[in-house]
Structures are given as C-alpha cells and as structure tokens.
Image (cartoon, rainbow, N blue to C red; front, side):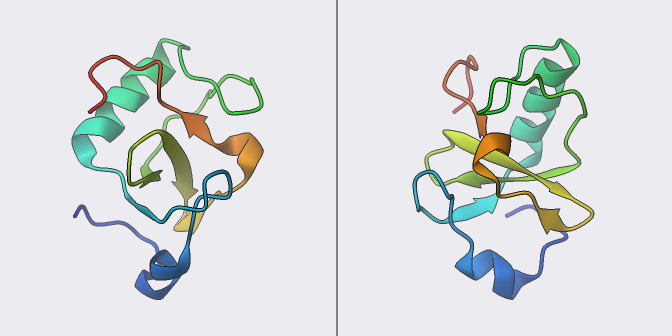
Length: 92
C-alpha cells in the first residue's frame, strides 16, 4: 500500500459516503493517470464541476469506482467532491 499522510486509525473507519464501502490509498500509478486526466480538464467531481487542482494524495473505494482527494492529510469525503472513475480508460 502506498504511503499516505492520513492517520491510520482514521483510515480504518472511513467509508465512502456514496457507497458505504471502505476506502484505501490510491496507488501512485493511478494517481498519476488521474492527474494527467485532470491536467487535460477531463475529470469532473460528482457535482459536475471540473477538477482543477491535481491530487497529491487520494483515497479510493475498493472497486476503484470513486476517488476522494486528500489535502494536507485531510480526506475530503464529501459526496459532491467524489471523483467518479468509470469513464477513465485502463483504470484497473
């Protein structure tokens, strides 16, 4: 599992607010792919707004369908800020 600046005890109890499944750190390869798509303005949050700022760290659901950014060690687990990944090619 990649290193992530989130309290391990917090990570154990966090769940996706959309699906209620547990989350884990997004691996570096997928983080890079996601940030490349963000730089091309191809990524939107659940609320439809464009993701403008690349992610330094992220959490993802076990199936990889939803990603949440982590800013300064704080997971942004808001439904409107969920990043769906179903339209990304070669995601998994």
